[in-house]
Image (tube, rainbow, N blue to C red; front, side):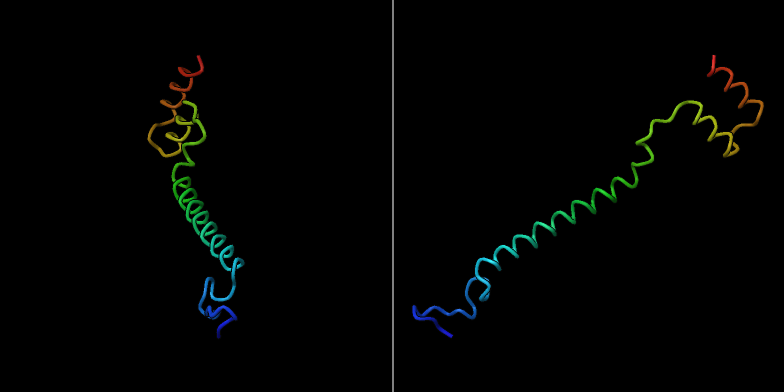
Length: 84
């Protein structure tokens, strides 16, 4: 199908969508890139999120006691050392 200037409208710029098709294409790529960046942030942040909170020495001591790495006597002794 040709217009009065002889240009083919069916397979022209944006396949007949004109500037709207161009804007949609730009929006698609912006959203695609933003989605990839967000995904990378979530995946990378998911592993490092445990380090975002600063742990105190008492917190670490409590975790070691809970895991069974130290007994109650050593926990009490180290806790007393840390509190003084």
